[in-house]
Image 1: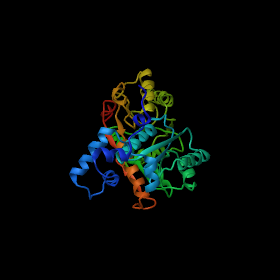
Image 2: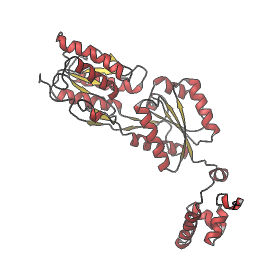
Image 3: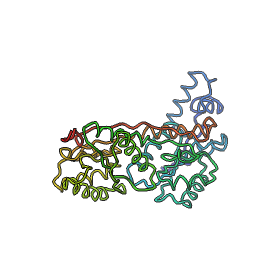
Image 4: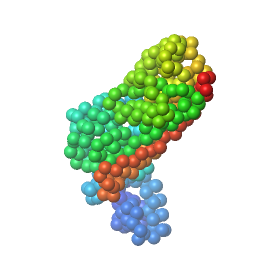
Length: 348
């Protein structure tokens, strides 16, 4: 027998009121968390909601409250581990706060692309936006836009007058470099990420600062682009320097700016007949899930993406509700994860 329209339509607030034997206004008070509802009545309404499978009409609620409970996320370079993991952390944190998320993913953070993303999210009625902006040019383009809602950045807000949250990248690099020097290495080489990336700049700055504080002249930086291939090419150069054993800057320890490049470095060293960590210790950054299973397991810096997500969403909600300062910037602490790819140098 065919179902009637009443059988297939979603339940309404009136249906819940009828099922619970209360008024429409009482159901509304229960849904809004109003304190002046008896516990027994609240339980009665809650059971009716569960029996009927009632879901609130978010569009209708937005018309009444002028709140959509929707946040926007603009994410650039989500194919990379860091931005992708940050996006996951943001979405989970927003759900925990009771917000829906509308995400726009961009391949590049050019000004027009960011403007189109802002316009798209504004059309969807978001209350605020978190922008994952890992490159300096992204942050500059974002700062020039006149967004109709609060905007919080992830990795980069401290560079301009924008609120934001980021991992303390420089501290993470310092921790790795200090760990390698404490193991007895005379110096630490560095394979950096690409130019214009704020994370790359901060990691290089932390590495350089530790060496200079210890009276060590930093070796020249080898450039990479976050990919294993770029790490492999840098590793081939390092392997050649290590085997030549020439000059006053021995190659016995390398800090690589991310774990994917570190994988390439490890392969190049292995193919060059150099043992890790016996001859050259290698450390990375990010603690990707595979890092523990590299040959050998990789010493690295762990980023707490869940904490970054929570603090970014919390800061955005504070701005939406008028509780935050304009350019507040929050730092999340990194954690050094020590594994078998680093150990005391034979030269110690």
